[in-house]
Length: 360
Ligand code: SF4
Image 1 (spheres, rainbow, N blue to C red):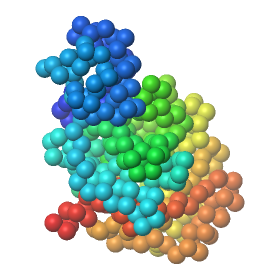
Image 2: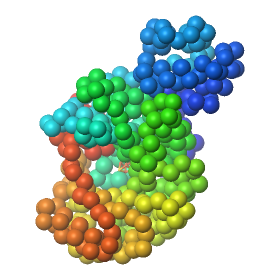
Image 3: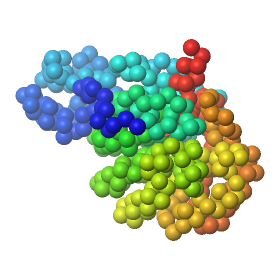
Image 4: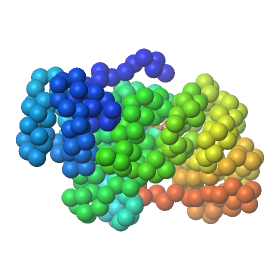
């Protein structure tokens, strides 16, 4: 796994400045920081990208500053492909960043409760065997501005196509968000700011493969976002076969870290279990999963596998999924079988990018 020291160059993007930092930048540049609110609003609510041209309503000192050398600029995101699912509710965007790297953002949901699924890295270092992003390897971390810009892109499309707003954010796209902790936290601080998109912290979910140092940092973090942990196996051997980082962060340590998180944050922890036919979908697996989480404030999300090129596995039959869920529920753990929305747009993390690469 690459060192955490491998950070992307940090381009100076407006989208990546939280409110206090924006005020400080204005102050340092001799612009009255009282104007920060109007600029933050223009970026995150009015969604004005080319501020020097579209931001005519901004006061002259702000416009002068934005067009000066050394001022932050808007994050350039170029949409390469936009793929709607057949039901029209899931929409996957493949986006090109300034350095040519490509990431994905997904819009999903229903009228009144749309969610953006955002990427935190280009590729991923965690190497989960059934995951298209894991098969790509790690390229670099995204900056806070690049993460925020994905959400603003989805918001812009939602407003234009449906007149709707984003209600939820899930950090469940390409990459392990807790491996890119600082940028992810800065991005979420910006996205939950009530002067901007104003997504409630309870409507933000961070999905991790079990990055223990990151969960510990999250436990100490002042905000309480939803934590979703991918398990997929109830013993070290089984889990390590699917999630190689289990060798570094074994199951017993991970579960204890989650118990600490739940207790100290007074929060329910969500556990994801990708059901792979003949691999981890037996009644014995269900019983061992239930035993592992016994006594914790936990919820189990069961996800029949999204088929991925490069991994020979399939989703179980429906009756096996139902039998698995029944055992989990009978143990007292609430559980949900996640709808496989967007399977026709390859909306598992990284799958659209891999599909394009394979075609090329
Ligand atoms: S499932 Fe998530 S953590 Fe695992 S390789 Fe894919 S993107 Fe990375």
